[in-house]
Each structure stands twice: as structure tokens, then as C-alpha cells.
Length: 204
Image (tube, rainbow, N blue to C red; front, side, top):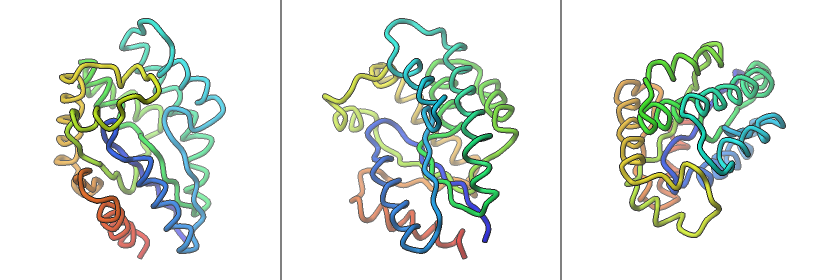
């Protein structure tokens, strides 16, 4: 039985956590062994890096931020994701390299190809079998998360998040075979059904 690597992408408030949980439960009902991860913070080392990246008060230089994400990603892939996929398990992960290219590339206005190259080096070229992009207007996403825990990226201005969304949609247009783009304003069950249909094709 071959393994799969599935990632969830999208702006804040798009429902990634909810849909990831629903997919994990469904996969387990199908008898698959599932490993959950996230970036940053999918490993013990990643949890320490996550605290710095998302919750440290004060300025972090954009290139330093990109390198911290890459460090987290390299360790997560080497110690958790790749071994699980090689064992034939399904890894379902909240965010991956597309987040870095969108947030640090488009959002922070770094060179997107340099950020992608850094992540590709960190992962030794590993890409997901499927990337689910939950697309949502940033203004709607901001309203959904109002009053939540403080996060360095969530506090960025609307034009930052608009650039991130545009970047995600451009990635999906360039790699339609890897991406599944879903309107995140659809009912939760409708979104879950669309994801299961695509994953079923991969499992067949």
C-alpha cells in the first residue's frame, strides 16, 4: 500500500483545521494509518521554532523568518513526513512550502523563486501528492478569526493577505494536477465531500 502526502493551504480563517480533522477521521474510517503534522510545529523542535516565528514580539527580518520556516520544514520532512510516507501511511499536514512562497515571497516581498528554492532544498525535493487550497477573501477570513490568539502574520494589513491569496491562486493555476482549489465559503460538508472525492481517486 503506497503512502500519500496531503497538505492544506489557505489564508487565515479559511477552515483548514476543520477540514484537516474531517479528512483524517474519514481516512481512518477507510482503514488507513494517518500521521498528522503542521508547519511550523510538527515536531518537538518545530514547536520551539513555532513559538519564535509566530509569537515572538518584535521585528524579525524577512530573510531570517524564511530561514526559520525552512529549518522547521527540513526537520519535519526528514524525521516525520518522509518516514511515514515510506511506511505506506498517509500524512495530512497543515501548511507546507506553498505557505512560505506565498507569505514570505508575496507577502514579505522576497524573491519567490529564492524562497521556493530554499524550501525545495530543505525538503530534498519532496512535494505533496495533493494540496488542498481553501480559497477565501482575506476580509472574510479576518472577520472569522477576530478575537483569536495573537499571531504575527494574522496582524498584517489587508494588502499583505491579498498578495498571499493571489500568490496561492497563481500556484494552483501553474500546477493544476497537484492542487484542488475549493471555495471556502461553501458549507463545511460540501467542502469535505469535494476533498474526499479527490483523495479517493488518489487512493484507488
